[in-house]
Amino acid sequence: MLFLKKVSAVRLFCDRKRLKTMVETILTTKVIKREDYERVLEFLFKYYYPEEPLTIGTEPKEPDPNDIKFNMGNIKHGACFMALANEGKKEEKVAGVVLAGPKGATEYEHLCEEAEKLEGTKWGTTIKFLAKIEYDANVFEKYDITEAYHAHVLAVDSTYRGKSLGSMLLTKLRDHLSSLGCKLLTVDCTSVYSARLCERLHMKCGNIQYYADYKDEKGEQIFKPPAPHDCVKTYSLFLE
Image (tube, rainbow, N blue to C red; front, side, top):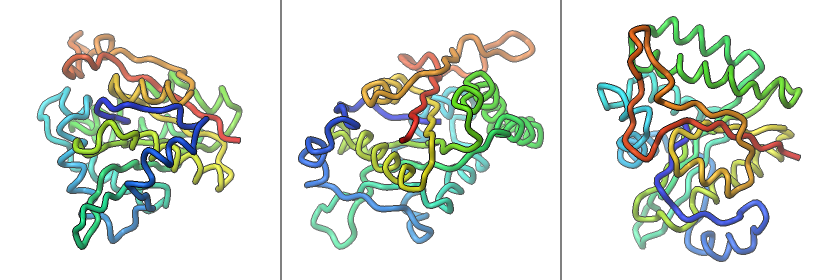
């Protein structure tokens, strides 16, 4: 689930020099490690979960423990980054994070299995929804690959929004994955703002799932996030 509160983005993938002038002279980035776990989790509870459409679009509005476990579990893959701001304090402040992890051609089946195991829970309901999105996006067949990386979380401290941090973090992730030989980066944008960011970064939209069209067996809409969030858009970036 990729969510980002409204920020101003630049055409990042085409103009790194401009980005460096705007952001990296003020902020630095680093790979998130195990010792960063607690402060990253604290950051997510303050700047991600209270605004993320799938989280606040269902009851209870708090995140499911399995949701937290899943997102934070991506740290072990070494492809999660955080932006740090030096405010003259001993420890730099976390200004933004992106959490990403690998997935394979059997991701749809894997998500379905997890949804069945967690049936009746909030995270089980969310996983089932994401499984449908994975199936409809069908990125592995479209790109004829068997492995990819998926950005699950992108969040920025409200104090630093409007400084292209979302763009910086996604580019940092993109460059890291390219150095590993990864061929594809995908994201499921649950908000209008993260979708706009991906479009500005020239990512390709391959699927749209409207919240109003996803209903339970009684015909009732399952996810009801606040406006202007009305759909999940899946974006892909083929890495060369």
